[in-house]
Every structure is written in C-alpha cells, then in structure tokens.
Image 1 (cartoon, rainbow, N blue to C red):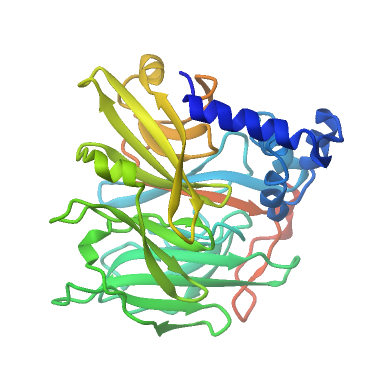
Image 2: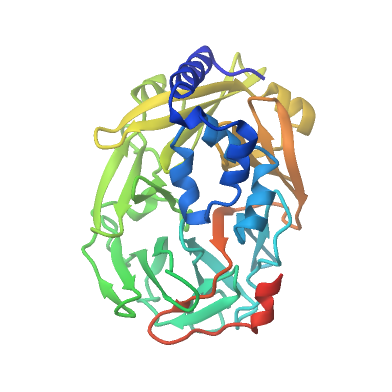
Length: 399
C-alpha cells in the first residue's frame, strides 16, 4: 500500500518546516520519555506542537508505556446484539486494567454515548420487560449513578455526551447529555432533551427541524471541533449527503456539506463514514475502482470548519489489506491519520496503511459489531452529580 502523492508532499513539507523550530531541540528519545509522562488531558495539545511529536504519540510502543506512566486507559468499546441482548466489550492495543460495564446494577444495558474527555459514559437499561433506566458511569474506575429518565416513551434517534475532566480525586465531574427522539406522527423534526449534571435534571431544548429517518438509529456521535457529528443518509430526491453537527454547550446546530468532489462523483455504492483524528472531523470514502478489482479508501480532513472546507489527506488501495486479512474486514474508524480500526469475524485490529501491516489484533466474541465508541480515561475517582456516586473499594486503584 502507498500513500497518495499529495499526502507524501504534505507530510514532507510539514516535517521540514517544523524541524527548524524549537520542537526539534530535544533528541527523539528524550521527547518520547517526556511525552509518555504527559497527563491524558494534555496529550492532545502536545500532538499539535509538531508533526514529529504527533508521530511519536502514535508509535506502537508509546500507548502502553503512556497508559502505565500516566495512569490511563485508551481503546474502544465495541457493541453488538445477539439473542436480543446487547454486549459491549472494551478492547485496546495493550493490556488494560479490567475495563468493562459489568459493575452496573443491570446485567443488560446498552451503551448510548461516551464523552471524548473525562472517561464518562451514558448507558440505558435494555431489558424491555422493565421501565428503562439511564446511568452515567466511569468504567475506568467502576463508578456509576442512576439518572432521572427523559421522555422514554419517545424512541431514541441519537445520543451525545460531553464532559469536563474533574480537577482531582473526589472532585465533581461536570457533563451534559443530549438525546434526540422522534414523536409519533411528527416526522419533520427531532425532539431534543438536554441533561445537565449541575442541575441534575433533563430539560426540553429547541426541536431540530430534521427528519428523524435521515439519521442512523443510535449511531455513535463523533466529537470534533467542539461539536458532536452524525453522518446523515442521502436525500431521497437530490441523493446528497451531509453531516449533522450539534454543539452541546451552545445547543446550536448546523449541516456540514461533504467535499464537493465526493458529491459530484455520484457513486451511490461508495461507503461513507465519519471519524475524528486530533479533534478534526474526517470523512472516509471506500469505493471500487475498475469494477470489483480494487477498493480504494480516501480520507478527507476538515481543514476549515467554519466554511466547511475539506482537504484530501490520503488515498490508499485496500488490495494489500484484503490479501492479508480477506475481504470480510470492515472499516470502523480512524485511530490516527494513517491507522484504522477494523473488525472481522470475532476479531478487531489496528492496521497501519502507511506501512501496510497490522499493528495489533484482539479476539472478541462479537460476530457482527454494530457500534464502536472510542474511550480514553484516567484512573482518578470522581463524583457523578450532586452526591457521591457508587464506587468500588480503594484497592482497585492499585492495579
């Protein structure tokens, strides 16, 4: 596999420019040692210092050492349904200290949303014989608290969550949850409810005038540019797709058009997905070239969010991947600009397109994964809401 010419030129230019600055003052092994000790909340800022620093943080040896030294976990929750029961398991490129959802009071929950920062998650009781119950939890520290229910008689279309990292052990974690639902016989708008941890209550927000069927039910939100994003289905008449963006802080929304080149291509069979890398929205387009002889993945990155300007960052053939892993592999999201997270029958993997090889693989019990939630968290206990939440004994922190 090889990167497109524009990708190689861009990477070379950036490296040349940044190597002349202060970021290149330290030897690479010293930079590696320093970055592995940076707290998780500050790692994103370090990645924008220079291309070299960013590359170091995505090296295979970096993540396990950083998680051990910075007392953090990093990976994904993969969720599927089998025999009418949801299952969400945590997977990581390196060993993680028993992160799961098995500490929740219900044995059957559905993971609804994960906060990109703060390590919090929103789950809901999935046993249809009972009244639904919402939970907020921190899987890394096995803490949880029940939330008051929204209007559960309206079916959920999408859920998003944002959190502010707590300032220290025992401090209160602040978070917000947005839930979009559909009201029967009202098919031209989404009903919006927002939960604020400071008030510890749901409130009705302004409806969003979008048809509920334009969003994939319960699709995980993609956090980037300070907003949450969902890729909408193509319009029935124009066959044009766009991205629904919702800012949980201001509760403002907008529609972000896809790259003009992608729309003008008019390939209705191309598979489109969105992801986020370093806080930037990315579009992944997988299409067949020359019939079914070759599949090509294009990665577009949002270069100007305010004006909706995209730049193509990578175009790579998937033939090498298919030769190694078969054609049943499914692209789920981007771990970095060059590394993708994929799944196939009872396996998940991290694959480096720039090097054309698999970085890591984990066996799972999922035959068909339906949702993937990126998850990063520290191991510091916090308070979830106004009162102290449920928590395990302190010896958990000794892991």
